[in-house]
Length: 366
Image 1: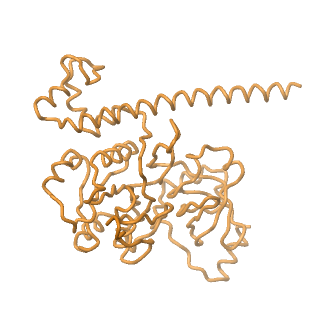
Image 2: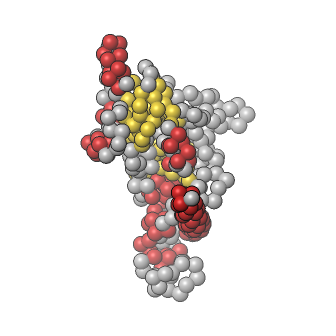
Image 3: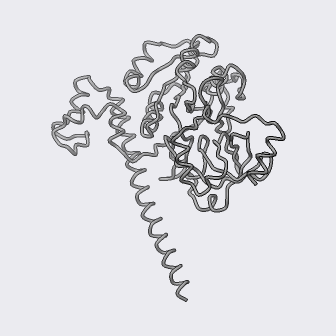
């Protein structure tokens, strides 16, 4: 079937796509060689629909579905997401079946809404994550902290974008509020009404680099993507006259290619972003608590009311912002709750798998 498809493309004179501009590299090529389906073509997931996936391959865009084994044999967060590299079996000019997925790297997750310990994959093979906030009522330092912590956990480089900088705002006050964040990531003040503010952002993206945009609805993520691409590639809407805010337009995660540059992934706005991490040490480091914690009298100090706590002393001495400390405690509780629930969930899954194996053995015996 692959040979017939290749002959078809040659007859059509279709131009081959260089997947290196989408991030394909030697490491991925080696990973593919380990797949039992290495003879089949590969591609990168650009859009996820309810029942199918759009996959960019050397031979163009394919509408693909999953094999039954993948669909029913994996957890939801293990199913392909935007940015994943997959191997597929083509069966028509632009249709195929995804038969395998290459191991993920630098995948941005979040806790699935309404669950205790289930996570959701947002995008994979991400180099940078642009945390977009607008300089109006949407501006929320605590929300930016939450995004940053999860992004750093996945070894992705965070970048804070403070959009709609043409609005009237107190820049000195904003910079004071985000001082601890600016130590962890670059900060850009942008506005689509001021094109000169977009140029430094565009120059920060390298060819083959993947950037995901995250943030609340109406902060201007899609408009920024359009500005960076120099053309309209994402649907946007006008400012609401009744609220003065941007309306939510993105309804799915979608990957687009910048000319002679990187790959951008736009995402729908989220009302809440639950942490899906189980490492409180990385949380302390991200929130700049760890340097103080090293000086605590007790190694297992919880930084609440213990004697000789260097974190509490830093607050008293004005070295650590009390609001940052309170945010750290809140995120730590959330991290602990997720990790504990995840551990219990794994134990249940393991027990269930053991029961299934025993049932199979009994069935085979009889």
